[in-house]
Amino acid sequence: MRSENSTLLAITEFGGYPDFSPLYQQAGFEVVKTDSVRKAVKLIRQHQPRVLVAEFNFQSDFRDRTSSLETLLSSSQGRCEASMIVFYEKEYREHYRRFLDRHQVFKSLEFPVDEQRLKQALEQIANA
Image (cartoon, rainbow, N blue to C red):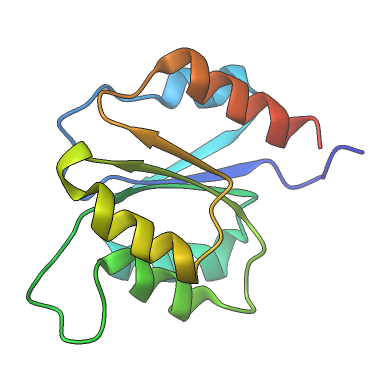
């Protein structure tokens, strides 16, 4: 059963990879983009996205978190039941695994992002 909400929120804090908007749109999603978690929290309230695509950026200066993704998830808890796709750097794999111990992610994709795997994940969500 296809959900009526087809919004995908793409959060690109650091970037350095292609803009996947055309791929998101091909999968049938309306794309909303932002470059910060703070803005994303507001956009989640406004759009109630079906999909969140974000980067895991390890930040050692956080006392009780590993990434701004944890801030995003705690701020949006109960407001949004989006499927999350996360891009992460190989060098931060161990930190990302600890993040996964506490948070549910639909699909994790290591950089460089394999577009075919991303497309498959989007199709799975779109057809759910």
